Figure 1 (spheres, rainbow, N blue to C red):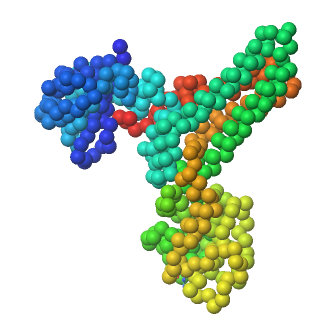
Figure 2 (spheres, protein in one colour):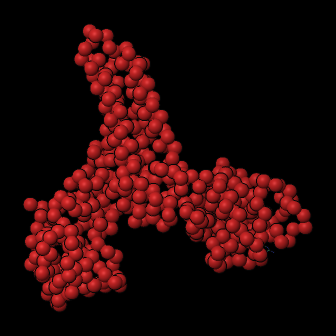
Figure 3 (tube, rainbow, N blue to C red):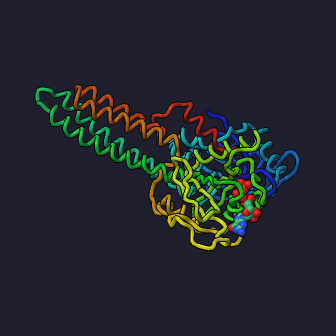
Length: 432
Ligand SMILES: Nc1nc2c(ncn2[C@@H]2O[C@H](COP(=O)(O)OP(=O)(O)OP(=O)(O)O)[C@@H](O)[C@H]2O)c(=O)[nH]1
Ligand SMILES: [Mg+2]
């Protein structure tokens, strides 16, 4: 008999309703002690009275019988009035009658243990809860729908087919099956490796979908970097003045554009610094540019052809176009007036530059570093197996393939270690 756990499943604080959830073998028996009339059948919300030690609460109750619940265990939910005190009293009542407080993510971890979800489903739930843009939520929804999980299982099955063909050849060496088997194994392994490469290559867009695009705004003092940040955000965030060296620190703010997020970083003007503090600001500006996905190199001089020294992609921005007498010299640049004009063209250009529109049409993106790491390791292991095909015997080849199979299994959780599973579920909030 396992513990019956309880927790608040809705957000804490003032709200219309709160949902308290209990899961475990005794969940239904515990609930019957203080909710009446208890629902006569599962999966149906029933209005009734919930007796707490402080007051009687007019609430609703629904129960689910194992294995037909989120956790795969007997589960009861109480839908009661919102706010802190009511939910707390309901939880205390459950604890008094035999339940214990749930850990973060314990409901979902039980769902995993009971085969109700795999690790990628769980990670999809976390990504959806954390998502702040539509594209991040969509990436999470895809994981939850098990699109990645299904693809991984199918690749694993392909690997098992190769292993069994190799093992037949090993079992019947007199039939001389080894050579053709090696050749076809090599072909099949190449195909699977190619599919892994395709998945790995979606990680660039996946990162954008999840975290957005980091854009560093750099340039000499007074060219209008902070004005540009404010215009891009549509609010008066950074201090603007005609004194050179106004901005000393880096300043990062995000704004959603279409279905993605831009993280704009305003920086100190680049010049030979007058003092140690300004020098630190300039160093931070350079670091911000080094770490960004793209650099906006701002100038207010229409004859300026200079390029910011970076390996990152950069876009030259001619700002203060309202003061220009003639067109700026470099045509492959953007011309704006942060003070008087519209700067949407910058967002649009960056959106196209990173092919962010493909996020909308893509079916599956790798958004999770753990998945990416497993895919890269599995691919390296397959490359090893492919090399083994040329240099060694079939038994060594099958060993390498089995290792790749196990690494892929870490993604869905069939071969994941306990500590990895714990780490994933501890990221959940309490009550999930
Ligand atoms: N006419 C005009 N003035 C602008 C424009 N953009 C900024 N300015 C002015 O230029 C001056 C400097 O602007 P900031 O945004 O503080 O420049 P900055 O690059 O952040 O300067 P530092 O923080 O010192 O590096 C301010 O007086 C702004 O009002 C523009 O598009 N047109
Ligand atoms: Mg500034």
